[in-house]
Image: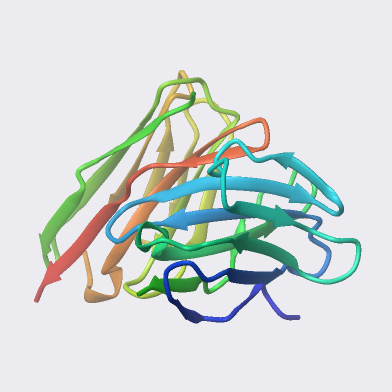
Length: 115
Length: 109
């Protein structure tokens, strides 16, 4: 009964490269959320997805960032042409359909460092 | 847009003492959730409050949801070293969960 799986745990990219972050939600969860956390700050909402649908991407920067949750496979957060300001912890969370009282289950996060 | 404010940002507590962290939302919430994040870790769900004026307890932790469903508090009694970490409140409106900046707790033995 695996929880939310994120990989890689740590990712180092040079400026201008692409970063791909993966998230497999908990079994039975159909909602996936991506959050970004800068050091000593709270979690900032980025995007909310269901299978094959982006429900809300209002927290995503308009350029270089994209997210998907295909019918098969994990959700992917993609950052193109990374810059130093993209360095942060990126957390994925999943939840069952609305009505649950169990909150979000977070993965262990991907710590992205841009050098 | 919805904003969730949390105070204090830092709480330095003597072991055995009590403390409270407060959370305020700019909008009325469907529910409020609390999470704990240990240093280097990920947020872990603690509890969800749904009803106006609701109070829930988990051992030494007491959670309250305000009558107007716009504010909440977490009170910890007899703080222990295991309480170290950052406590986040998160207010939900529809499907969107907005997190406060968190209260980072350190404990002096």
